[in-house]
Image 1 (tube, rainbow, N blue to C red):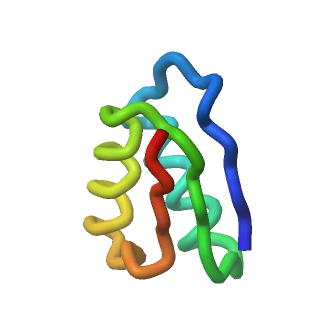
Image 2 (image 1 turned 90 degrees about the vertical axis):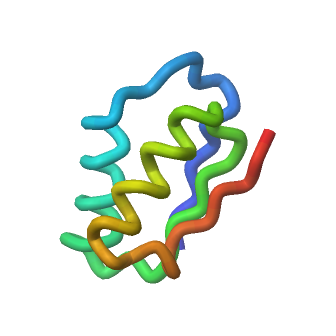
Length: 64
């Protein structure tokens, strides 16, 4: 399980979200990714990417 604290992150691109999800949930044997306090936009990016890759059940977004 990996937890990322995104509370201090002002902005993040779709490509950054794509890389996080691909590298941590598809390429590596990470069982679960939790992202703490992302912006709404970054949370949408992460959720969309996880859904597209079929790993949405292994992603948790903890809102601000």
